[in-house]
Image (cartoon, rainbow, N blue to C red; front, side, top):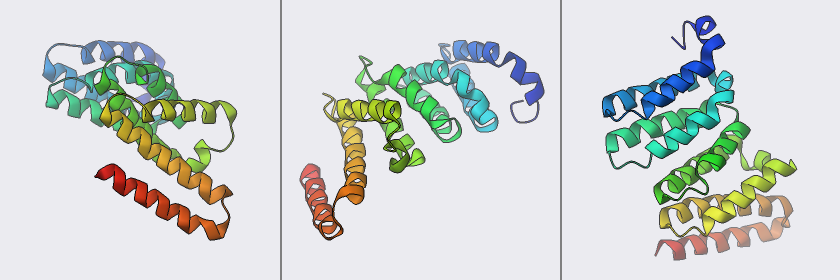
Length: 195
């Protein structure tokens, strides 16, 4: 329907998303997974038209991505991946930060960190660090919080993003002759972290 009947869907998009969110919360795993697949399809086909619904849908998807059932986690990750790829990056970043950055559950924070890392690749570090104060500040504060999180998987994603930020900043501000030695330092830090 999202692909072929947009004219019918768009006037009632908010109500439809609320109904789908309720089905994502359904205790029947098949119903919940079908609802998450529907959200994924809506992200793909409606793209920026889903921006107004990103925050509400992301919150419920992040919660589902932390469940023990692998089947449900895969469906939530499928939908979140499509959200990151298809919707406006600043809206997605805001939804991820609001929905999962300070969540009590480490699995939700880990999922948030994973999709922030993916979003950083989609947006590109240059855009994230472009100097738009609100965007850059919120992103850097979130990444620094993730990099020191008590949960190891959250820290892993946060540190990956920090590494990419540092590399971009060095490429921008460090003298050319020192860039290679800085890359070697990063490589050594990476090796130490893996052992």
